[in-house]
Every structure is written in structure tokens, then in C-alpha cells.
Image (tube, rainbow, N blue to C red; front, side, top):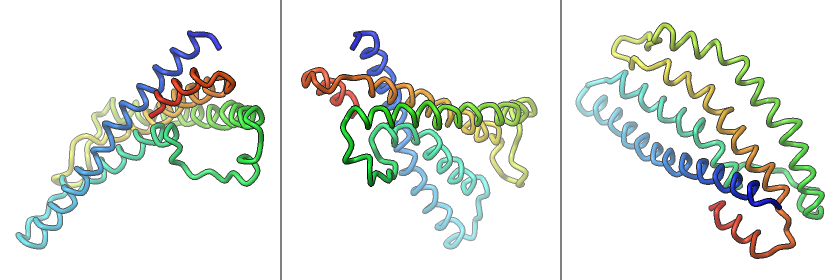
Length: 180
């Protein structure tokens, strides 16, 4: 395997890991904000649309920005009745075909159909229709573009990983060490 491919793989993995390790803290904020919503509303009779929307924004951010990291860490559900019994070479080919024929086309389609939608939200500075809501709907809609971009980057890393020879134990261990 060329050193350039390995370096590219490691850089993509670092980026995905950095994003994933950063956004996982949003779950803690989401829990804190949810508790605040309940306490404010039921203990002090102070409803907060903005705080409720903040929970929604955090939830969307956590999932949309964390999907690639979850894939990198092997956290997505995988039905592998046949796959697990196949040789590493056959698994690599299945992974390559899945990435090239499924993941990348779907992500490119998502980008294509969402680009104008998100651009329009930015153009008008879209805000919440709720009184007291957050004025950042355009940022929330930007996650629709961020998701496929991050998945494409991770797909490229996963595709590169399928070309890592499994015969060199030291190099494979280095790649796995950088995967997290």
C-alpha cells in the first residue's frame, strides 16, 4: 500500500474522530436542557420555546454530525449473516461495492436535492415560526448538507481501508490504532 493512501486514510479518520468526539458532548447538553425545560415549565410555570427548540437542534446535530463517526467506530447495525464467514478479500469487495454503488450515490443525491433548500434558508436567514423560537433555522437546515458530506469523507476512508493489506500485521495495527 502506498504511503499516500495510508496518510490520507489516517487524516480522514482523525477528522471524523475529532468531529465525533466533539459532538458526543451535545448529548449531555441535551439532557441538561431537557431537564431545564421540565423544571422551568412544571416548577416555575415558565415555558421556553427557545429551550425546547435548542433540544431539537442539539438532537439533530448529534445524529447528523455523529453518523460518520458511528460508522467509523462500527456502531451501526449490520446484518452480516453471510459477510462474517467470508474471507477478508471478499469482505473488502463487498465493502467497496457497497460504498461505490450505494453510499456515495445516495450521499450525492442528498446533496443535490438539498442544496437549494438549504441555500434558500440561508438566503432569507430563516428563523423559527414560533414566537420566542430560535432565529437559527438556516443553521439547523445546514445539517442536511453536512450529513452527506461527512458520510462521503468517511466512505472514502472506509474505501481506502479496504485496500490496506491484512498481511502486514504492523501496518494494519497502526491503521487500527488510528481508527480509535
